Length: 68
Image (cartoon, rainbow, N blue to C red; front, side, top):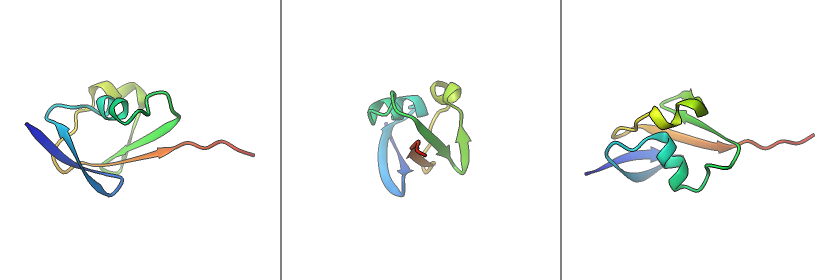
């Protein structure tokens, strides 16, 4: 069964029971410096694997950019 979330403002389909960690892996961002916000709350990297996504969750993923 699939669920629909909103990813960076756009509809996105996932399998029921998928986690933030799976989403990050699926998008090829697992080795990147990113921040993930789920329904306006930051998800710590240590919680990606245990944070399950549900229908209509709003996920924002941004890349961390260093500079000087």
